[in-house]
Amino acid sequence: KYLVQADLHGANLSGANLTDANLTGVKLTDANLTNANLTDANLDDANLTDANLRFANLTRANLTRANLSANLDDANLTSANLSLADLHDAEL
Image (tube, rainbow, N blue to C red; front, side):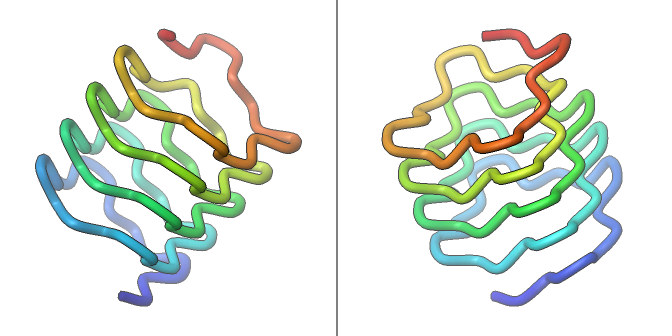
């Protein structure tokens, strides 16, 4: 589960199991991550602009420096690391 700096713009990852995935620097702009399981995933410096993360599980995810200008309605961010994350225009 190593997708470091991958370009996944517009990808449909709805319901995907990305537990423990290394998604450092990944481009997930306009991606559909509805109901995705991102527990313990590393999304350091990821770009999630305009991504759909409704009902996504981001428990303990590392979102350091991530751009989260995304739809986070009903997302689980329990114990997620949001240090330096950009939540400008995020839908919470």
